[in-house]
Image (cartoon, rainbow, N blue to C red):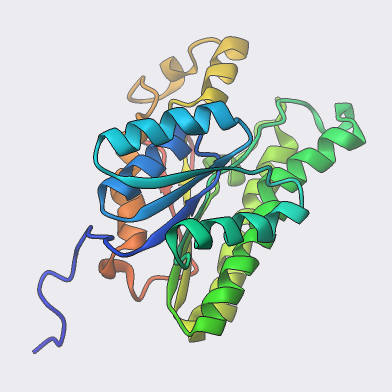
Length: 258
């Protein structure tokens, strides 16, 4: 007989506290809404304070609990500060969704040093530092936690038409997920990643403007809706994935070659 209830699945996140980065729009906004709807208190973070307030108003109108906290993940001095502010407003953070990211849409030799540093800081260095800050506090408190990193199918495929650095950073996010999971499993901190394909977002809007309707090259001829990532996100945060750490799930609607 199993010691766990069957099925061992629940989307109830009541009593949990989450930080979602890049929560001003697109996937991050959706993730914050989903986590709040499941009962967690959510710190909405991002650089556009006015957009954070709009998202917060929507979540609160739907009955959720949240706190908008302006935050620039490229600023190292703000890493500790955003966790401090979240703890003061909502309690100890035990969920982190590293969603913030920017594309490059340039060939490797065409990028300025400043732009290279910004992409690395946003997509990789900032998430690394923020993950360590959250994990350090969970370890000290002897509390379990869940970290979900946003990678991309671009981590596994690059066709040479620009976005080399984006692809590189998103591949590194997968490896970051794996190595952190190894170090932190003894502390019951699970670290996993989602690698979406082409989904509706501000980033995707920019790509469609540059390249046209790329969906016509996909087998199902469609761009994904952020709601189609809900189940993967909630799986990584639910009891069902208690034994799952250091892995990633591609969600790409069969859009690209394997």
